[in-house]
Amino acid sequence: MKHLRKELRFHTESESEVVNITRSVEAAVFESGVADGFALVYPMHTSSTVYVSDSDSSLTEDLADLLSDLVPESRPYRHNVTDSKENASAHLKAVLTGHAVTLPITNGRLDLGTYQTVYYFELDGRREKEVIVKILGE
Image 1 (cartoon, rainbow, N blue to C red):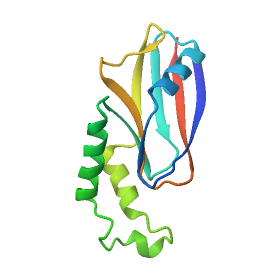
Image 2: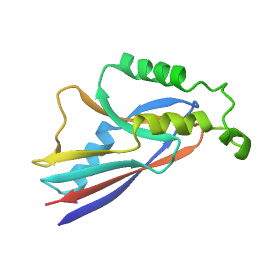
Image 3: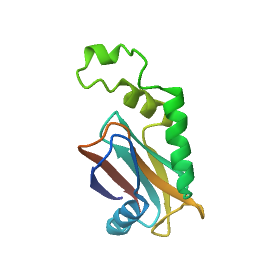
Image 4: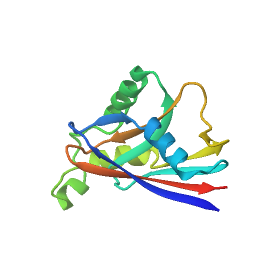
């Protein structure tokens, strides 16, 4: 069985930022030489998430707005008392969106639909973050 562990690094400029990482994941799949298998795309932080959605950028904005409505920053979260970063809302938004994705690989390529895009969603940014891409297969 072939495998590859690839680390993607991001330095986001804003606290909340969505980054299209589809090409970076595709490059890792190509580098792995795996023809059929899976790619796990896993953020190494609990205040960020990876998800698959339509390539229309208005959806990324809608998701950010929805999460802000569901998890307002102004609420008195207990975590903000126990952690000096006061980033409870970022952690909760990440839990709501799911943490990581597992993507199928067929014939050496990500098996994505026509408009499916892989996004990294930073929810507590302005610093360096990592995403692990772990590829397994034949």
